[in-house]
Length: 180
Image (cartoon, rainbow, N blue to C red; front, top):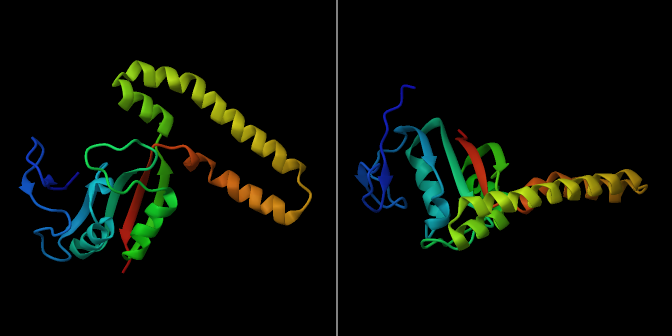
């Protein structure tokens, strides 16, 4: 796709080509077009410092694609799990414009079951009953909204419904652009 891959981490693993602390990256300002930060922000002791550092090194209109834990259980020195509101605030406060914000496909309950037993089959079985329950919950909320007469109550209920996909998610996917 025309990109040159650089794997950056603070520990040596096979995909790592550069050892560095994400809070202080060894790249020139305005030198990178795209950053993929997969399941890493919860492991930074100061995610705002990292987001500012990414803003510094990205070229104008550079993009960050990231995933962040929300309702996943604690794992491997995770400091900051955040909701979609936290993820949006993190990047907007550091000069980015949010292009997309989505929940993970799996819930915090599925993540907990998987981390508890390390068995994908149990996570899958949990999803078999949990996904229909969440679908039903959404339909009940929609049904109740249709019956509301007060426009203010209806507006608040519709706002509540819009956030429903984020309510039980294990994590957040976000795509942001360096706002210039």
